[in-house]
Every structure is written in structure tokens, then in C-alpha cells.
Image (cartoon, rainbow, N blue to C red; front, side, top):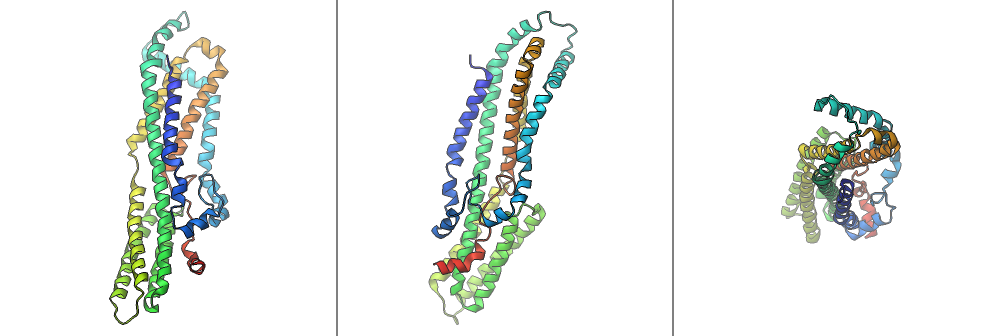
Length: 350
């Protein structure tokens, strides 16, 4: 008979393989989905652990990044150490709870061997099997969807910066009367956009204000293009005008997609279900090991197993928490933050 640990391991392996197929094999496409010139610039930079080109700002702010990731790096080791050191107390506390909750006023002569032989088929069969399969399925779905969300947001931010840069380049062909105000609006939008999407220190309230301001700026840019298009006294470059319209429309659509991705997240009860299923696995482990002889003779082995179990749950926790917050932590959106500032050099390269 396949025991619960085997089912849990198989479930997690299947979930991880699905995650690799859906997410980890696609970063190259999303990171280099930019137009060739910008993709070439990013490809020439070294990659970080997430497969994203390391920008100069990332190098300068290495200490800040380390402080943001301290929870991800330290939480699992702390949980593992605490689980190993406190297992005896945990097992004793659970045993006392079972005695009190069941109202038992006697002790087993055989140390609970007969009770174990009666409970084991149910615990290692349908109960642990069902809980393990549900847990692994829900975890795989959660991580996979959150990683897709992170990848989508990364791609949209990169493409918005790319479109803004191209829009700025096309304004070089505008007369000075329309070029300067367009450049000013693009600069204001880019500054707000970087603060809202690439600065972890920006609060949610400030981020909302920046987004509202950018909404107005987009409207002003569209008005500028319309006025230029209807101005019969100035000479127009029809190709540049069409490209400017296309790039501005792309920015508007991508910004809407980015906001939808940012708001898209699982409800609180979904994460509560994961916690309940994980707690069920821990309880099954404590029930199966609640035997005086086993606690006496296999104390060290049980400590190791308990530490592995809680350590695995802690690593899943930090991964999910990190993916939920795409603006900070290890899975923070890492895009070249000064693409728009290099527009003049970009034009010279062309």
C-alpha cells in the first residue's frame, strides 16, 4: 500500500513539473519579448537568480534588496531549527491534548500498539491520501497561477517602458510647438510609472494617486496628438504620427492589463484552505508517532522528520508570500528602470 508520504511526494513532484512547464520554461520569451534593440541591450547584461537581466540600479541597491529578502532567506531555517528543538514538547503537548479531549482515564498496557494497528489503515489510506493529493494540487495551482501573474506583470511593465521610449523617439519628428509638451508629459508619466511599479517603498495610497495622475496624463497626451493632427499650419510626418498614436494606444492597453493583473489574486479563504490541509498532514504525523516506545527509541529520527515536514511548509509559505507581492522580495519585478532616460542614445544607435 502506498503510504501518505509517498502520495505527498508524488503530488508535489507533479505540481512542480507542471509549474516548470507553465512558468519556468517561459522567462526567456517574456524577458526578450521586447523589440530587438532593447532586448539586445538587456541580453548583454548578466542575469540574476530569477533569470532577469541585472540593471545598474539593482547593483547599486544590493543592500536594499538583501533587506527586502531577509524574510524569505531566514524564515525556513528558523522554522526548521525550532521544529527540531521543540519536537519533544510538541509531541507531549499533543499526547496530553488527545488524552483530555478523548476523556481517557487509563493507559494502554501495550503502549498503544493495538490502537495503532486499528487506526493506521484509515490514516495511511483514504484520509492521508485524500489530504495529500488535495494539498499538493492546491499548492501547485496556487504557485503556478501566481508565477504566471508575476511573469505577466513583468512583461507588461517592460513593454510599457519600451512603448514610452519609442513614443518619445517619434516625437523627435514633431515641430517644437508639440514636441516639448509631449516630452514633458512622457517624462511625468514615466517618473510616476517607475515609482508605482518599480519602487518597493511606495505605499498603496501613493501608488493609487500616481496611477490616477497617470490616467490624466495619458488623456493629455492623446489631446496633444489630436491637436497636432488637426493643425493645418505645421508640416507633419505621417509615419511618425501614426507610430505615435499606435505606441500611445499600446501604453493605455498595457497599463489597463497591468492593473488587472495586480488586482488579480486568490481570496483569503483559498490560503486558509492550504493552511488547514497542511495542518491536517501535521496532525496525521503526530497521531501516527504518538507511541511512547517510538518517542523513546526514535526521538532523533522523529525530530528530523518533523523538521523536514515543517521546513517544507515554511518554504512553501515564503514562496507564496513572495509571489503575492510582486513589487518587493525575491520575485520583485526587475526591469531596466531607466530605458526612457536612454532615448537619445537609443536614437543615435538607430
